Length: 563
Figure 1 (cartoon, rainbow, N blue to C red):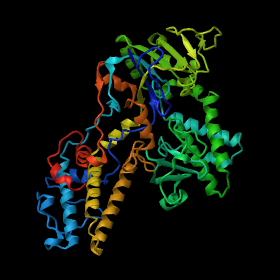
Figure 2: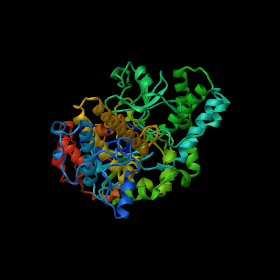
Figure 3: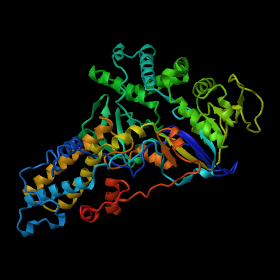
Figure 4: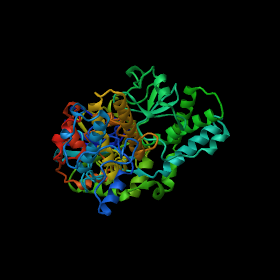
């Protein structure tokens, strides 16, 4: 017998390894950390898609090059349809500069031909994506987290958390009244960022501990790349000993993983922005701790719970989808359990709103105030039973009974399989599916290959051409980053590597999806197969898959030489 559980990415690890009840389990939750390494990287030139559409609607042929700082209309272009291998080399009489620009224009045409109309929309935002092979046929038990898994919340909740924590800083910690001028900025931060407490830097780090240049902020303003490199001893790399532990709880660098951390990052940046603008000196450690404690008060003291309970319609989204998923699984004779850090009274009211007053009939077990992730590793806290009103009972628990409510921890060794809920997946896929992004990404990859191959030409004119290509490449990368978030880009990728968030998502989740409603799109016996992830030495295959998804390109032979 197998089991599967769902949680939201970033909220902790649910796993086990086979003892106890002798069943394989998978947990679905707020995703463990972020995107698959085989997904598209950031890189696209804005406006290309629109330009292409205009030429097509006017009955014209597509341009051989795109407006940009590396475009040279006066440079000679190769004959249409001629393969790159037929281009004259400088040794055959053509000057190097003309040769380089001819290769550039021909490659741009090749990339255009590589992506025919309709090649976009390859990714389905409602699909489930696999890191490991898993068959739902083997899953008999489904476990669910509550916050941001069964219950999806409106962004209005983040504004309430920000405003309340800001006011706590002013009223209880005596921070300046001027902070009241700051409101929550919904589009400022993304999940998965790291914060260097001693340097007051909020930044995006990749899976290999490199800071993505252009994504380091002190307060609400970016820090120049040169300063970032200097702060870390002349490199973008942050050594392992300086990083926090895997759950982001170290004393030096903190990682913000769950969705509730978005208002905390914005408040942290806003306070620092105020202090810098007003020339106020501050202790970095005390400031970080004060803000962290203020945010914690909003949760621990039950303020957030009261807001949601008071206006369910305002704060809880997609309740009908939650009911549809749970009801379908029960009708298919699957066993369900719910495990959450939230208190019973809060969960009870939310589930009644989404599912109905008899919601507990759907679950074989309900565990509240679980203290995840230590729930899965701490043997010291035995279960305690709660009555229907959420009051603790004192009788000893020797077995878990259907329909009962339990609190505290237990060491679980059930061979968990894990499903991650990543709400950001849907909007990011919609961006990836745009013609603007797809063409930009493909051209960036081709241009990178040209730079790598043509760097052998080192005369003065060639160096100038290569410099212009480098500048265009950087411009494309920046523009594509901004499509996801102007400050920090995608939560899943830096320019070419997975983010640290993605590293955790890949490591800790077997499958991941935008919401649990994605389960409704699959048969209960469906098997998820992960795609082979190309490595750098598999470059021709990688280029083919990256540019066209699962389509085979007729231009593969011509593209091979650019890597």
